[in-house]
Length: 263
Image (cartoon, rainbow, N blue to C red; front, side, top):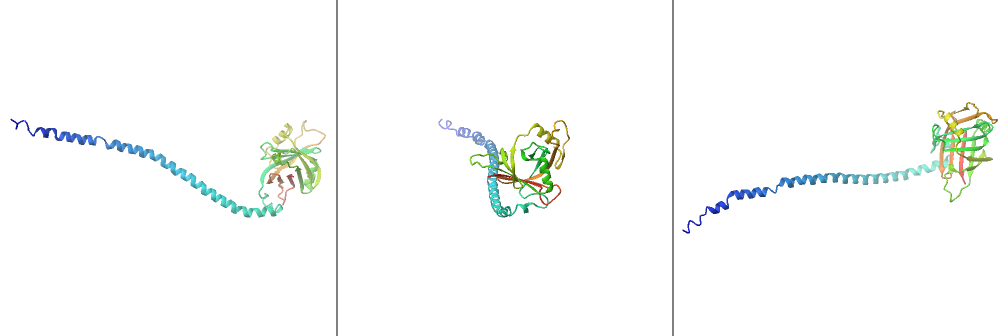
């Protein structure tokens, strides 16, 4: 009777292959695909960080090398530039009418013939004046002297160590015309009449003449005349600037030179 109670067939049913087959299914159910699906996400999360690192390295290394090369080049180029500045002012004028180291701007001399002449400096003929000076010389006399030869006007003012006023913003200047003291130059704000003159001459790059007469300009001081030309602005330092008027006739030198010096 004990024999039929131990039938071995029950053990193969319990250890049957379906349970073992289910276990491999469960072992495969951890699903390497989901874990593999996480890797692309991780790899996808790595992909944006890699270009950021590469870009940072590029931006950090390239500017450094460029800055070093620029500094070396600037130091090397500075040596030959120093010597010409000590040798010229006259030889700095080259054949094409430019001054070495100068910036081209527009300058206008205008005023009634018997009244004090005004000097307007503009970046170009279509913008507002950045400097307007009233000089201590009649307009007709200055134009006459310019027709006879080179005119040099020196404007000097005192230097104050604490004051940080820009050179062209100084309010008053002592004026010398060809070495002779003639009075004072005064910086002022442009009036409506001055702006009307600039508007009438907005299309004129260079030239001279008489502006159309009207009631506003009919004064005992004579006709309202003007002369406009290109100037070369050379900044020597914060206390010195020079304005060379270029001769429209193509001569060797300008007819007018204006020096601003703070001493």
